[in-house]
Image (tube, rainbow, N blue to C red; front, side):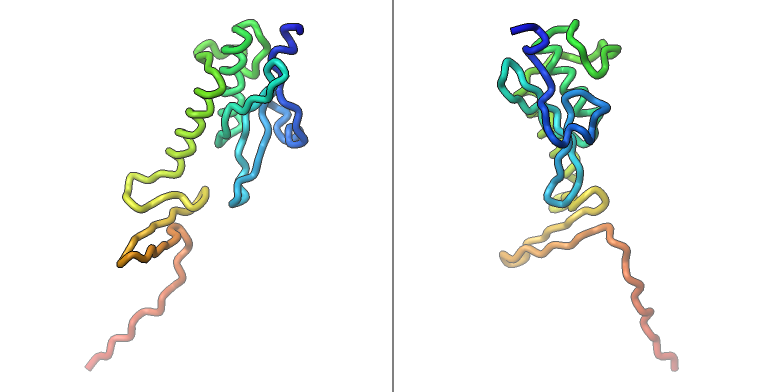
Length: 149
């Protein structure tokens, strides 16, 4: 097996969407948001390097995997980046998971992301969970009429 066969980007129908970076494809979440996946075939085995918020983040993850599995002379998306540290697939997946969790969390208890623009608040009262989506435009309320005497 040649050195070029040792790591190759995975072939996928969605790879046409992100042709600007090698080893990066897209997938849609349940809410319809696009997420970027870094992946490659290493010695004929498919590896997923995590799901990322941007194509650039996924490309950097791919480059770090290339550095780990092939070394600094292998072709990468960002050959000029000398600050990238090599990382194996498991480490990159864990970093992607932590990054996704940080995007979803709020510093406030009971508040999490509903989607890119909205937050969701949950409150348990007497064993019943109540939820509110935050960030929606408010409907104008009629102003209270005050009887003047």
